[in-house]
Image (tube, rainbow, N blue to C red; front, side, top):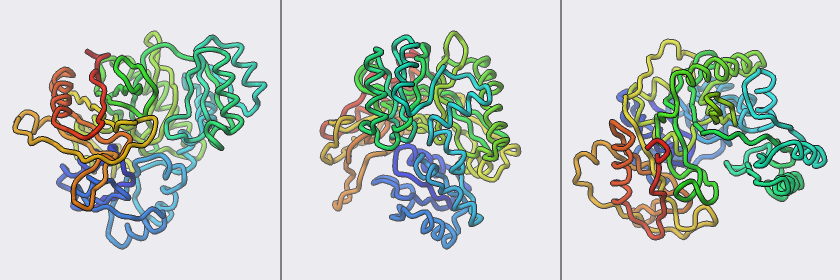
Length: 422
């Protein structure tokens, strides 16, 4: 099987790594890929959807997997499917679950999926009125895609009103913020749950927990994610059952009833409040860095999971996971998340430790290949050091042992990933 992976981050690298272990996969292509994906397959400098479909047809690519949200919202799946090509991901209509927070919240309300009390509006007056009915903190969200940054947790009524005004005026997030969602703040613990869906059937992956803040003890600004671990012991069978019955099944039935069956990854942002799972948001692709921890836990061939979901045949798949834990630590560039950082050469010490060789690896993200053939940190989240173990503690130790082997100027990372579980 030949596979094309759309995207350039650690998430796409990790999917590539899982496919590389798969005997059924012959050739992997990345579009555009990053400076390290060329060690797993071939990078393509093609961004136009039509040209990518031409490449797939001309080169006998059996499956395309879409990593990031933007191409999904822009309709790459519709274009490929119209040409009879197998692609993993939701249609543009179904991708509105992430592309529009207003669409998503109204969908949850229509199908009685538990979510926070909210208002969606483009009126500042209505936003102010609703804000006055809530207790602080208050959540203000831009409607459209903002690269994971369109959510403000305001600590006071004044801050919430200021955030709403900034968004609605277009100052904060441009067009993406000219309609907003204001909602009550939920106090509990957060989980990332991923369901691989084929329109009717689904497979739930081990629940993960992401660490969004830049600094230890969940302090500092929000980021795209500074690390994650899976599975989290904060989820029991009762919570999984509630998620299946109250969230995933009504969502898949509702999407089908509304003429947009959901295929791909349903990423469920869950807040557990007093044992009850309440839905914060949906995304329509893997989380990054959660994907980097989930892929090494997948025991079944990755091609089977993605191909059978893309072809509506998950019923016939037997998907298994290792009874282990994975912890991923993000190593970011010096100025992340405030501004870009000049490229810095990455140097990795030789690893002589057998245990580390077999139970830890790097997933590369913000890296480029220099003309000298060396790998450079090119900014943002540079790479993820992933450790796998029989316990969270063992996985964490291995991840941090690997962190100690990686060097580049200005590197930064948290030293407490998975602390909630430990």
